[in-house]
Image (tube, rainbow, N blue to C red):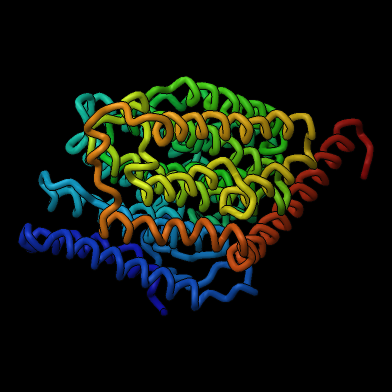
Amino acid sequence: MEHILSLLVFFPAIAGLLGFLVVKESIRAYGISVSAIEFFLSIILWIGYDGSNAGYQFVEYYPFISSYGMSYYLGVDGISLFLVILSTFITMIALIALSIEKEIKNLIISVLFLEMTMVGVFVILDVIWFYAFWELSLVPMLYIIGAWGSANRMYASIKFFLYTFAGSVLMLVGILYMGFLYHEATGIWSFALPDWYLLQVPFETQLWLFGAFFLAFAIKVPMFPFHTWLPYAHGQAPTIGSIILAAVLLKMGSYGFVRFSLPLFPDASVYFLIPVAVICIIMVIYAAMIAYAQKDMKQVIAYSSISHMGIVILGTFAMNAEGITGSIFLMLSHGIVSGALFMLVGVIYDRRHTKLMSDFGGLASVMPNFATIYGIMLMASVGLPLSIGFVGEFLSLAGFYRISWVMTLLAGTGIILGAVYMLVLYKKSFFGEVVHAENKTLKDLNAKELTALIPLVALVVILGVYPKPVLSVIDMSVQKMLVLMDQKAVVQETKDLLFKANTIGGTY
């Protein structure tokens, strides 16, 4: 257990390099085996995790460039633990469901390298290394979309890369300036995130640093008006690319808000709370209305992702235990549900080579198992009680209700709109008469597809009925973060009072 985090980070990449030596006929089994071992390691991490300890665990620290405070620094807490498990689980499930044959070796190796970067982002505590893994994640996804996507895949992949890379450049400036501020305050260099948590940043400086980090995270989520790359990327990406993009990569942005923006810049987070909330409400309602107008099944789910991520960010900026814990749980539930929905679209696309709802109809009678699982995931997506989607959405909205009941009511309309467009999709595709003769001979889910989908269905039900094992671990670390934010806010408030007293010539 001493170096389990390093093993989790680098095992997929090392296995990916060795994959070049594997013959093509065995590469699929090899990829699934590697991802299964990685998932098993993440479960061992969970078993060994002390749920009563809110701090970082399994910490590994080795100086890297000591003169500038850079180090190889890993650690995991309740906020990041389940995102690591989500990354390993979704990667394994996506590889099990993989149906592509074209250059399959390169694809599987790319996915394994992508898994390394995703796990790295969630466990790295040195901010320079975090930035490196953050940017490295773009490369394999760029390749996956560009090499295995649809007709306009090159445009979609380049747009995805330029959007996310451009936002990250400003974050790099903010990272370097934070390192400089720490040096100015302490006389030593450090890019360790726990060290930065102790740093008191002046309010005016917090404002622009918050903006620098916000842009990178907002594009990755993506938040309005930076969302335009996502539907195009989903529309052109292969199924495995859409699954991983929706389930994990988007969560890197929302994780960044929780891990960086709130604890590092608490005063700026409060200052920008209402503008961010307005953007979230626009995301929820606007994306839901666009989803309703779509004719392509995959585009409906793509815009649905934007709408649900609006509630995730809204819960995060509630800045209380209910909201933040709910938003992290909603990251997990959205990852499971959206990943499953994109997988289901991929299943029907492999059979009919179309994603237009008008090309289907009557699928419930032709593919009953497919229709049943699709219905379960659809209900989880709209937040049906006793499903995994309900827990996170309820807590996120309940948390923000303490900030503004009006804004919470507006955001809650997204649940109603989500039910409308999802039920319309289901009605058009699964009920009524069979539109095309080809649909009458469609085969139901095969053993491989059921193997990938049944675990997702089980999680939707189990964590919807009994989420406590996950929520309690998350809540412990969230409570600790809130204490840190409160302490920093008190210190900053005291400094402001002293400044005002000295300005008017008085004493305090």
